[in-house]
Amino acid sequence: MPNTFAYIVLIIWPFISLIFYKRLPIVNATFWTIVGGFLILPVRTEIDFPLIPPLDKVSIPAIAALVGCKYIKKVKIRLIPKPGIERWLVLALLIIPFITMMNNQETINFIPGLTFLDSVSSTINQYIILIPLILGMQLIKTQEDQLLLFKLLVVASVFYSILILYEIRMSPQLHTTFYGFFPHSFLQQARAGGFRAVVFIGHGLTVSMFVAIAIGASTILLRQKIKTFGLSAWIVIIYLFVVLILNKTLGAFLLGLLLFSAVAWMPLNMIKRLSLLLVFCVLLYPILSVFDYFPHEKLVELATDFDPLRGESLAYRFFHENLLLEHAQNKLFFGWGGWGRNRLVDSVTDGYWIIIFGTFGLFGFVALFGLLAVSIWKAAKVISLIKDINEQKLMLGHMMIVSIMMLDQLPNASLAAWMLFLVGGLLGRARNIKIENRK
Image (cartoon, rainbow, N blue to C red):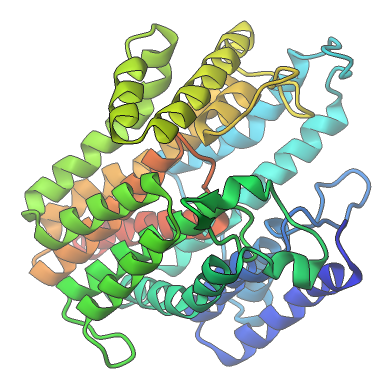
C-alpha cells in the first residue's frame, strides 16, 4: 500500500509544475512537468474521484502541463489537433470507447457489462493520455525546439542514471523506501546474479527502454556536434551504454544498439527507409499474428540458441499473446473494453499492442498506432523540403527514435507520456516545415 508521502508527492506535483512554468521557457517547463512526473512520481498510486479516471502518475503531469501552457504561459492551445489525418485519429480514439461499450453489455468471467459511464470515463482517460502528444504538436515548431527536446532528454537520463546505478548495486529499493511499497514483481528484476533497476518508473524493462532512447538522443547530439555538460557526446553515449548493459535487459540493449548504429552511421536515406520499414512491420504484426504468418517459433529458437532463459521467456510471452489474440478475435473490431474484460483468467499481458487490440479492437489499434505512424510518415514527406543537412539529420534521428518506440510496443508495454510528447514534437515540426516552405 502507498504511504502518505506517495499521496503528498502526487498532490504537490501540479504546484511544482507551476514553478516550472513561472521560471522556465514553455518547452522546458512542459518537458520537466511530463518527464519529471514519469521519472519521480509513485507507480500504482492514485487519487480516485467518482465518474472520472483516477489522478495518478499519468494524468496529473498531463493535466498540469495543459493548464501550465494555457493559463500560465497563456499560449493558445487547441484541445483537438488542426485538420489532418491526426485529428481524425484522435477523434476516433475518443469515440471508440462508446462503440465498445455498446458491444459489451454482457457479463463475462463475473465482470459486469460496460455502462455509459464506463465509456465516458474511458474517453476522458484516452484524452488525458493524448495530452502530451497534443502539446508536443503545438509547442515543437522550430529546429531549436526539436533539438532542445533531445538535449533535455540526455540531461534527464544522465542525472537519473545515478539512481539507476544505485539500484543495480544495492537492489531496487528506492520506490519502497520513499513510497512504502514495491510496484511490481521483485523476482522479475533479478538478473544474472544481480538486479535491474526500477527506481520510480515501475519495471526494469521500462527503465532500460528510457536509457535506450536517451542513447538515441545522445547520438543525435553527436551528429549535431553538440556537447553535454561540456563533454563530447561520445562519452555520454558510452556511459549510457554501460548503464544499459548493467541493467541487464537484452531487448532494450539491442534496440539501443540498433538506434545508435542507424543514427550514427547509416546514410540519411537509409535511416528514412529503415524507420518506415519498422513502422510497416509494427502495423502489420497483428494481421500476421492472426493468420499465423509471423515467425514466432523461429524467433524463440534464435533466442534459445543465444540464451535458454531468454528463449523460455520469449516463448512464454508468445504463448500468452496467442491466447489473448484468440480472445480478442471474438470482439475483433472494437474490443472487449476495460475492467479486465480483454484478459483471460490466467493470462499475462506484456505487449502494449495486444492490450490495445484486446481493449479497443482492430480499430483502436489502427487509431493509436496509426497516430504514431503518421508522425513518421509526415516527417518522411518533408525531408526533401529541408535544405540544411544538420536539420535533415535531426529529423531523421527523431523519426528513428519514434519507430524504435513503436517497435518496443510489440513485446513490452513501455509507451508513456514522455514518448507521446516526442511523437507530438515530430508531428509538430513536420507540419511547421511544410508551412515554412509555403511562404
